[in-house]
Length: 504
Image (cartoon, rainbow, N blue to C red; front, side):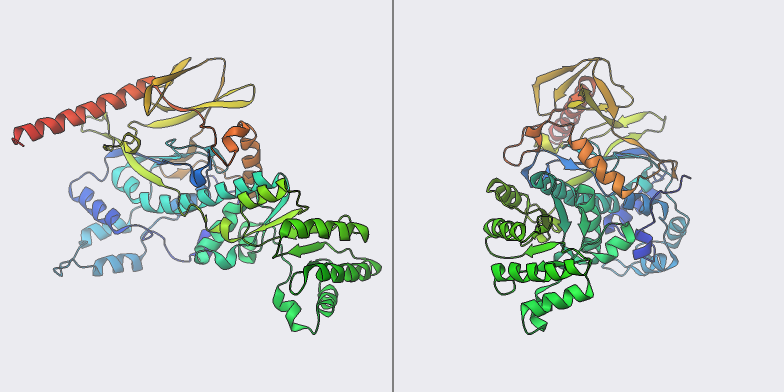
């Protein structure tokens, strides 16, 4: 087993087993598979999402490391089994028999798991994670996988959008007080750092994930003292090397003057004022005014930090208006995914072996083409030309990927694209576990963060714009598409035959 390059974070927070972090029906299905003798049947599941969040053109994959830790530590503890043994049906009958609970007590994950690395730019319908292995085990991974991957991917995507809007400026994640509980606060801090934030105000996240921590002082600090100047002076005395003064408690322009006065005293003592923070009012106008005042007073290197319900849209507009902000503090709208509360990631069975060991392809049918899942044991390949990403191809590993290959728009068969064998190709799903043993070394969080910016640089700016982003090409390999269409026809014909036989 390859050890992780990063500290084990989640066992630090959650001292007990997380095997019960699941939906109840996963356990009832597990019992059903076990009773039917299907629990060891080889199967394949894929996790993907259907819509890019925030009406954008892309998403950032995140949450793999917590999922890895979940899989490695997966086991039903004695207290878990005692709890399950006490569950009763509405009629008072025992739900989970003792022999099944004994089976669970010895259960460990033995699946093969492949995934796109954290920090990868991904698109709708592409498999982010593939799980192949015993049916019962793969089924039990559904709920925790979606829980551990959907939310961080959402927040990492939001942070990447904020980073694009800031155009190289520092971004501080200030969202702990508005986050969705302890879990939400820690997960959001980690994901926001992946997406491009420079630091967090969340000290526990800083300790666990080795994220830089930053912060200033609050309005209450100012209000404790008789006047603002005295408050600034006291703070400078306590923290001479960390002075970013919050200047809008009473009057912002006066606050900037007071910050300059204390900044001069700090300089005489051999320290330098880091900057000022604006938290209310017309932030664009006030940042311009602050820059003028600071520069005139000889503090041209002092930062101007802005906060107050910021998001990528406001930051982009303020920069367009000429704001002189150099550091952006983003909180509520970032850590809650404010304008898109969830990534619609799903986990679907795509293949299962029959009694003869042959793979039988499966799909979830729907009246809506966009909700029909893809069959097969899937991989996604990214094709690039001269360093620029041009298309992603979803293909079946058993059918293979021809070179050159023709891809089809899954929702419009008249749209095809031929990819040259001269294009560079990279398979995005990489091995994480083989038969339950980890074969993947996780990069550091700092490396994942750098990977996001590097990966985004390979995509045309129109895909990354906020309004009406261009749709990046994601297609199905022609042979796989034909398999899917034929399977849809077969299922529908079978349903029609059954209806006809009943005379409906």
